Image 1 (cartoon, rainbow, N blue to C red):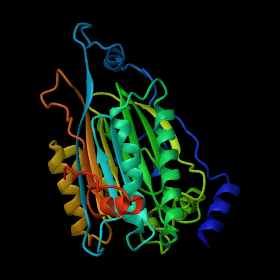
Image 2 (tube, protein in one colour; image 1 turned 90 degrees about the horizontal axis):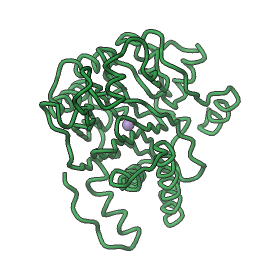
Image 3 (spheres, rainbow, N blue to C red; image 1 turned 120 degrees about the horizontal axis):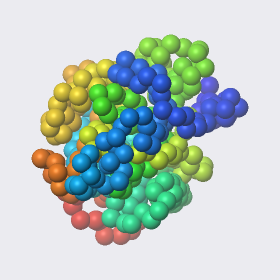
Image 4 (spheres, rainbow, N blue to C red; image 1 turned 135 degrees about the vertical axis):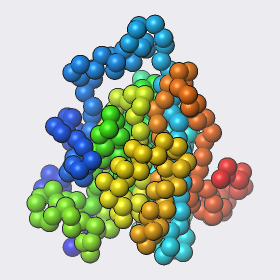
Length: 343
Ligand SMILES: [Mn+2]
């Protein structure tokens, strides 16, 4: 089955994803089976503490809570790949992982251009429509890929996944296309909040193969959707409510393809320090053979004033967006190389 045939088939069978409500019983064992975009209910049940957070007070009704992000990001080429085609950005309002495809530098160009195009969102006022702001930036990134391909037919066929969270004052807009992933650890429950746009995921959804066979399926890398500059981007979009104590993981398939959800959960639930958590995750992927580039962002929602650990303010680029592809891009654009990245 070709990619186009697979895409057509997905469309015929209604593979486009909606936004189901809260899963009935999320938990570490069910993370993969709950692989749907996830919208936590507002002020659900007896969550008085959350209701207070919504109103900007604590349970006593006195202190103001100022939610902010604390994060760490890491990218590693792995053991078998010559270059790193993953790119990622983490800043106080934007977390994004992109995994380039296309081979021979083109994947690097695609992921780096996408990350570079959406990164300025971090410093902008997103306005009242957080999802719309992120979706607009992603559409612009897709047009950027089209420009790059038009100017250099040698890179035609390149594309990239993108999983991004634009965060503002307790709300997160989630944009997802491809097979990078986002997970949420909340109140001891760990769930995957994105749904892979892969052939094997669609086969699992239709009950044609077992979930346990995904990782070893010969077509496990075949994407049904990606940003490729050639078609209108169709990412999944959702608005999440976030709460102090939430921990988010965004990663490329170089991590989630070789490390089980159960192990991801164990690391995230047990390693408090964010830098250490990202290091442990990358080490685990390398210990499993490191067949692909490995990129992960781990982010905690903290109270900027009340928390013992301060928020992070430093923007960070890693992977292709932090190195060679930037120079390639500036040459393609005929411009001056951008300043050196912070990592
Ligand atoms: Mn990958």
